[in-house]
Structure formats: structure tokens, C-alpha cells
Length: 176
Image (cartoon, rainbow, N blue to C red; front, side, top):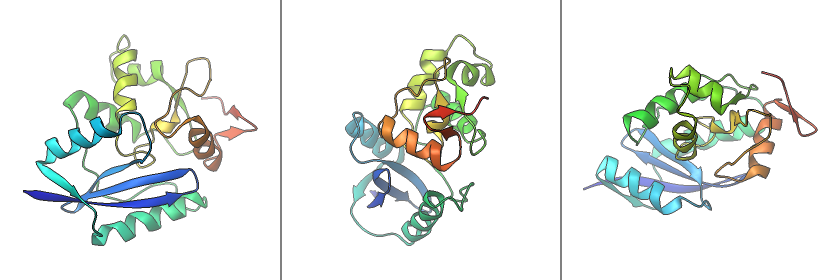
């Protein structure tokens, strides 16, 4: 059986677990989240691999890019990603990756981008199942009324990420 090399990363917004499978990042997710065990099970089943707490050469590259993101000098990650999920989830995550740095989008707009405007709940569920937080910017999705809504890392972390990107000023988002 293969291994997924997992290490903790202490970010300014909370502790992330970073997982590397082969030469791709399959996990960059909040250590303390409601769906932790189901996300971990899905990733391990998808890859037919088990978690091992050991450093992989890519951990340093991922950590360096996250460090640069958190100080505002990196807007686009160049890490090879592995999406571990259903084809629908993967299609949502691919669209999330196209939301520009510093911009936000509503769940309904995201559904329309997927040519499935009535799938708002399914899109929101796939968004919430994202195991590659920050790298796949699910934090850039907000409610149709502009409210910051659920986020695996918590709303404080979501607000912090959007402020880093300049998408929020004093708790208000830029219009999209």
C-alpha cells in the first residue's frame, strides 16, 4: 500500500494538514474541522494509500508558497494538485481554481458557471468537501446576499483570507 505523507502547517489563520501523495498535494486542509474524518477517509480510499506522519520533499515547497500567500506576495499557487473526489466534486473544484485572487463569487453564480443553475446545494456541498483549502480557493465563495457563509476553517479564517487578498475591507466584500 502507498503512503500519503502528512505534516502540519501552522498558518496565521489556523493549523493546516498538508498531505503529499506521490508528487502531488492531495490535502491542504484545516486540522480542526467538522468533516475531518470523512475527508481523510475519502482521500485514503481514493488513493488506496494511508496517512503517515513523515516529511516529503514537496512539503517545503508547499509551505514556502503558503508563507508567501499569507504575507501577500503570492497570488497563484504552482503546486501539482490531486483532486480526491467524485467527478462532480472535481468539476466544482476546477471552477473554484478559476476564481481570481481578490475576487468573490456567490454559490448561485458558481452553479451557473457549471451550467447547472439549480444545483446550488450540491455545489455548496462539493465546496464544503474541498480538501485543498486555500490552494483551491473555496473561501472566495460567499452567499448571494454578500454574507460570509460556512467555511471549513471557520468564518474568522475565511475573513482573514479574503482580507489578505484585498477582497474585504472592514468586513465588507468587494462587489463582483
